[in-house]
Image (cartoon, rainbow, N blue to C red):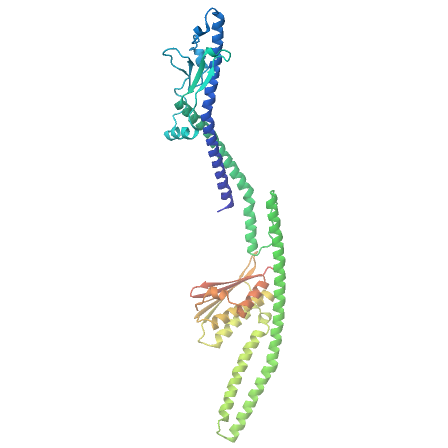
Length: 456
């Protein structure tokens, strides 16, 4: 899952938790606000009745205090204004058939759902009535009892919660949207860093990254740039070392070719000369003791060894591209394989692009790759048709593509993991030239492709 989506998901979870906590707090505060409204109503009505009580007492001083009860004319419109909605107030001791004076409760809030009306009282408890004396100095003046209406209290709480939730939802949506945009904008440079790493994986180590405002991303960008520099230096050092090793190995091959030619070649020629002398002498004596037949077998074996030695010397000596050029050397290579035996598979040569100016290490590497791939296809498979394609891709990425395909079967994965000297050698040569080598399955066989850059 992408990091931006993970952060946004976590942010939404935090917002949802905060919204849930706000809902619980709003429910509790709205439900308990009815208790505060009840107490305030009782206090206000008690203070109003206290003023009426002392006013009547002063105007009618001849009357006994017990005759002032209940306080006259307390059930007025002014008293109604002092009672909060959903609260009922009564005076004690109450007169006969006197009903509580209640605040407006009809149409108070929206009708809550049943689950809310049943859950809230269960967890938060019921509302208690509030008792306030009319006059703290005169206990006989009576008391005011305020009782909240349970249904009105739940309706008020539900209406308050809806209002709070609407605002909270808008704020949560705005916070989530703005935070998501901020997170996406902050992490946008990560795509640039990933692209740079992908370019580095393809061999483009000199990848410049822009300057990031974030300190952490700037540190990562600096580390990526430093890593690319070190990888390029290490690659150049490895390529130089590989080229040096190839030069040393080529020198050894040439020295070995000279030794084989001077020592084995001369000795084989001497053996052949001795065999011819013995055969001539035996023919003159006309002896029939089997010596002539043995000498002829020795001559045949010597000729076979000399032919094998010539093939080995061809492979060990400097390749033909240094003498004939790449195109002519490839034609000569294919013709030599074709002429060895008519029973060998068909070899198709496809040359594309201008190959005349390709020389040096690139031409030598291309020739060695083609030579080794053709040798493997001819010796280690039952191919009936082999295709050698050499193409020069001009343009900014001037490169040489060598592809050898056969229909002789074979496991591409096993061949790619092989540690044979031939494949290891061409891998080293291609890597030293800054190219790439791939071994993939083809139709009925294998496909070996090498890309050698020419722009270097």
